[in-house]
Image (tube, rainbow, N blue to C red; front, side, top):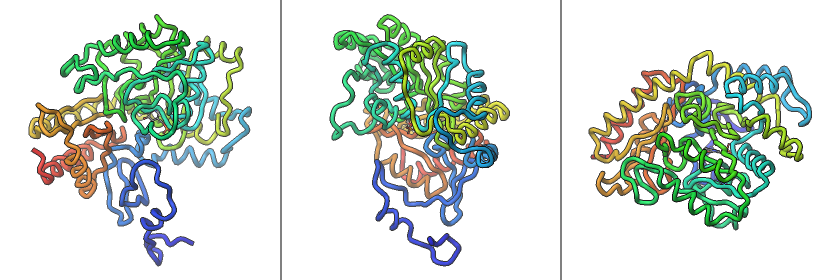
Length: 437
Ligand SMILES: Cc1ncc(COP(=O)(O)O)c(C=O)c1O
């Protein structure tokens, strides 16, 4: 039996991890997390660390929220898993209560496990119903590690794995701080979109299927498209017969200060995918589409049959998440706390020249560090040093944005104002101690 800290021998688990765990992308952090509650994770010494990444951007209700724990217990008393044709009350109730939050065009849901899976299902749905195979995504996108999602993911490693599915195409992401076509400065006028679609028109073989987009591009560097961008994208899609898929893995269910980011864009996607925040820490994802697309897909024999489709345990959790979001008014809270956090960051930006940009929506914010505001050279070393110092002082922040130096700040929506302020004090102190100017 493994020793448990405090019970006899305290194992060197870091050494065990090096020996037995396969590397899968980034080095493991030095600390081992033994427990988590609310906005905090606790290391082996019981040290509390404020978690500004909500786990892997999932735990919007906070870690180990009592309603999620109760839902897991309930599922343990009811049913955990079934063959994929069998439905449980939790799945049906989740579909009804989730669809009640959505417009009439999005009333048919299916439940899967991960974000990648949901995007693969969305892409298959679009291919089958549109009859084409071309899938357009954005540079810097992250849609998951499963085949179809990976093929349309441009933020993660693509080298070394052979060709992406035939028909994948990338549009330049509308990064106002670093215009991809060197056209705008500081604000985006969406020319990059028109240029990208004109390239698509040259490249297409006449087999359009879908455009897949994150309403706020997260892993790619917290890129917020300008007002009207998605309406313009919708027009481009409609003109070409491309289905519009919104991947709201991170933006959905409250984080941006709206229940869904698309609500504030004046655009309803043909297919919506939800994941991370739907299970709030338990693997659960959803694909939601219209009755018309659902019917056409059914007529054409749509198939996305997995071991864990419609599983009762995660559905029970998803139901608890949807209900807690409403009961605790977390959407409004995300908007309010997001404004407070943004205010604190903007105040830091007045004191540190190296903070080149503060952006985002609600409680999904990004801070870009640069060597100076003129050159905008990414201050990567500084970002890594400050990140380490923050962790030592009790704040966990994540890096995003590839070669650029960007923090993604996304605490649980349930975080207290005191912890939010404390986190900003830690960031300020860490910047100062690391010699940021
Ligand atoms: C926007 C977005 N979509 C999809 C995914 C993939 O989700 P998963 O890792 O659950 O497959 C991610 C993961 O980071 C994401 O950020």
